[in-house]
Image (cartoon, rainbow, N blue to C red):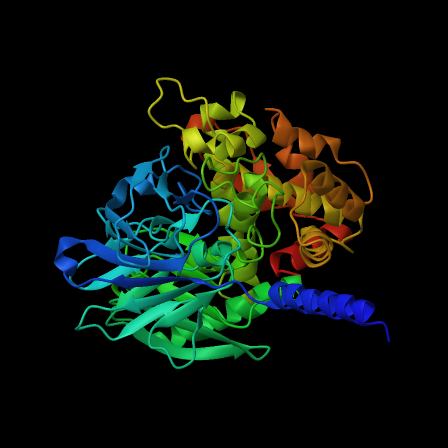
Length: 516
């Protein structure tokens, strides 16, 4: 064999092995440690360690909003006392870069160590908070990432205050490491809130072999077995509607009363108080839990194309929050009704109230449903309330009304063979499962009309124009009637069943009102 050819071949083989090995290596995770030595100061302390990249500088960034809450939050203003050092302990110079970034001089540095404080001031589901009794971590407000490297894995270790015993999160735990969790990328990390304190966990249940946990802070006095039984019914019906459970475990995280709720891929954070559960109504809380749980399908996976990959700096604006939020509101009572937790009259009363909300708001004459979705970043989720003349609406209110009309129209046009459920399943299968992406407005429309088997121009005009909905027509498909003669500002519209519905109307009402 020719020696030079052999040598060249060996060199090529060695190079190939090195490249293949490098390509097969998993990137080193960024490691965070969160401590809270003095919780009365409402301040978390964060340590961050990672390998330096090439170049003269490193640009660290913090998101400016929480996906699921469509408002810019200015989280970076709560970062204090940032100190960055190299592998030899030398302090590196940094400068603030824009509203939510820090540029660090890192030329020649091999590894980096940063420490900083996160000040907390507000108890709210979209903000971190720490006090003497518990700590709530919203990762978007806590963990810095390198610009352009959102796909880097991370490892987070929580060091609870000395008197606390638990951490709750949807992240996977690292075996053999106490309160340490791994995220394959920052999208997952930012979607996984954490709660620490002396927490209580209720007995878990399984649906199709998948465990579901409920864990929280100061849960209060209520019937724990009944709550878990009812939540299990909700999970069974909601997951059965879509026909798939896409996670390997799910955690309901109760963060205390009065702080809202935000959905995540395999968890949800919810305001919860067992004492208020008893005094304010059991079904109200269950409807709220249903809403947040169904979101792991509708918005986390069945989603407008603008909602992922996220623009963590400016926000991700879309015309389709009426789908993500409005249709989730629509499915609250349907799922509750299907479980037997809500009666027929309660179902009708729910939609009656939504119609009243829409028709007594003057903004319905000025702002379209698509505009309300897009402009929520400035208007807020329920529209502007301080205007002299209110010219805005809420996709939380008109969205479920439009969802009701679409559902009844599809049932009518297909002889009750198909419904909005088929639309949701098709969006899930075609875009999330097959294409791993969201859908455009055109794709949404073509999907709905394909399920209906016809064009639905009139219904789509209720989204893109301020055309008044023809309630009598669409409710009539289910043998329902609505009294529109009362002065609108009194808000006393009434949905009733017709005295003599035809066979199809009876069939539609029966299946629609029982969630099938």
